[in-house]
Amino acid sequence: MEPIRIGAGSNIQDGVVIHCKEGSEVMIGRGTSIAHRSIVHGPCRVGDNVFVGFNSVLFNCTLGEGSVVRHNSVVEGCTVPPGFHIPSTSNIHSDSELAGIQPVTPDQASFSESVAQANRELVRGYKRIRNEF
Image 1 (spheres, rainbow, N blue to C red):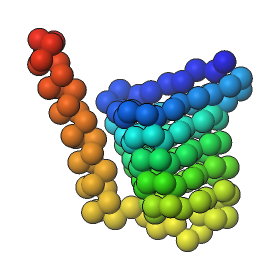
Image 2: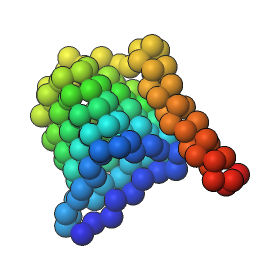
Image 3: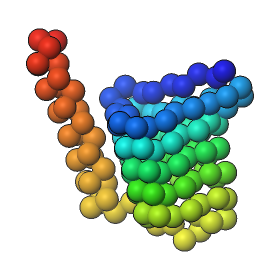
């Protein structure tokens, strides 16, 4: 088995499956959010500050820093450039299919950051409840 690495400050939400087999490492960067019921299957590299929406599937791909994959999307066999936005329900299966993909807008980046911030606040709250300051 290959390692699964998750960077500091990332949040992996309930129902997420992260899986790899021999020769298929999974690396998730810092400050990244992987939302409910998503699947990340190696080989896969997810950059820093990436947002992956619920029910999305990542396989054999690289997501550049600051990219956003919205809910119910499939991304496999390609390299998503930094700061790009994969719209909801997209199915991207090759680099050539990325031609119509646009950069992340400020509103999309703000939404992604608000999800990450909400999850960081949950951690702080849980630690306060357990007296873990």
